[in-house]
Length: 108
Image (cartoon, rainbow, N blue to C red; front, side, top):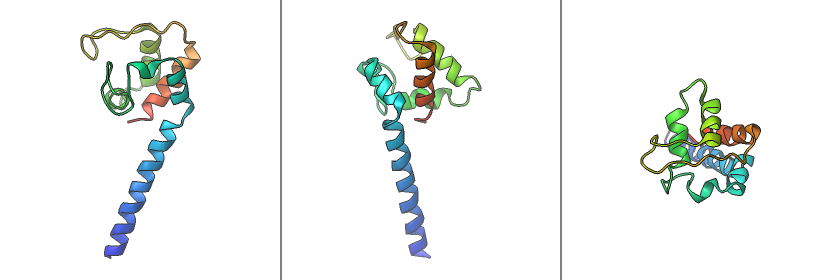
C-alpha cells in the first residue's frame, strides 16, 4: 500500500512538472518574450506587474476570461492590480492578444 502511495505522489509530481514545462515552452511564452511582456511580468512571482499565474487564477472562472484578458492586453488597464498602470499594447493584433490570453489562462 505504501509503495502505491509513493507511486501516486511521484506521478502527480511528474504531471505537475510536465504541465508547468509545457506552459513555459508554449507559443504564448515565446510571444510574451518577443513582445516584452516579461519586462514587467513573471510567470510565478510579482514583479512590476502581477505574476501571470495570479492573473490566470483571478480570471479563470470567468466565462469570457480569454476575451477579457485579450482586451486588457491590447487596451491596457489601471488600478486593477495596484497603482502601476499596464500600458496599452497596440502593436499586438487581436489574434496575438488571444494567444497570450489563452496561454496565461493555462498557468493557473
